[in-house]
Length: 474
Image 1 (cartoon, rainbow, N blue to C red):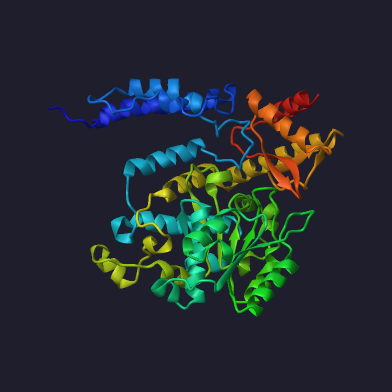
Image 2: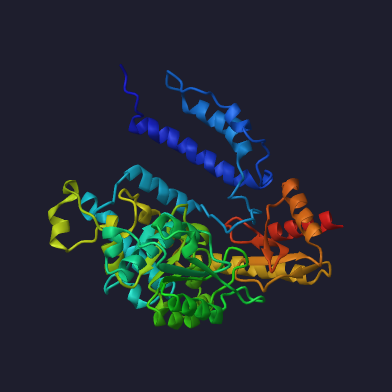
């Protein structure tokens, strides 16, 4: 019986064809409608219910990819995909991910592949420096960084570390006492904060939604101070405050420098969620977004959004790794080894909920080296410039109004005085296939979100999207 596995030469030949398919997809994706045009269940109905008994050639897989799956895709790499923050899968990111997949190493502990751990340590120190983040996050001191899958996992992990510190280790031994701890984020905080409270055992009732400034949509620090004071007076213990740097709804940046002393006064862990916006600090002119971050206990930003790195890759740093490792460390007999017991190495299994972990740092390293700081800055600068151009178009048309000032690559706008026309306009543009926008509500009013930052988006794509909006409004 012949081997069911591809030989290296067969893999080489088929690999070239797959790379060709991806390159062709990128070069033609702008000719497709951005949103999928299928009905619920349509894709599943077009696929066989059972696996084939005999092996099928790659031609059959590619044919079904084109025939069944591609029509059912919403094209996140489309140059006019503006609905959500970008999920850039750049050429360098894809090639780095391919290398990682081909190596197939498990980096759960240092001993299972030393280079996986040590590259991750080095590349996160390099990225920390490139973003102007504080020395307290460097591995040379008490802190350090780790690559999580998503910012949601990073937030959950930060909360576990905060609970460990607040209970002096009691949370991992005996669980979380019900109704004792509180968590704070603005009304605009990402939903992952609520989910983290649910998963940690604190429950939804522990989360306090703090009011925001109606103009900037940033956290109202006075409201935070009042909420925390009231909870302490009631015998509760504030365990974590999350500050958002670039909220999903409007891109609002919470005043971290003002939030920090309030959190410190009550001994609460300060976690900064900069999932989308944080990477913009690779440009020195945008480092204002990190004002006060030197006081944070933890910080997360996602290279897999705006920094050209294929999903998933979320960079997470802590100021004191002892609380993080203390919350999550566990060493079964089958993982014991001389390197771990020497204390001379980092075992990243202790830095997040998962045991198994992919070689994510290889794709991030590939991206950072392939673009260099100059190329990364050019990419961010271009997205911000295009957002300003779109905002200028909105301001110049009396039928539209800005809802908030543009933040980096995000523009939030609406049809003047008419929620229904605003929503109808979005639906019309999205249905037309030219572009894809999303909506939010700001102070109870409907608004449209134009999130710019794809590596393939050109100025012509911005103008084409504006033309589509104007034509559907007329």
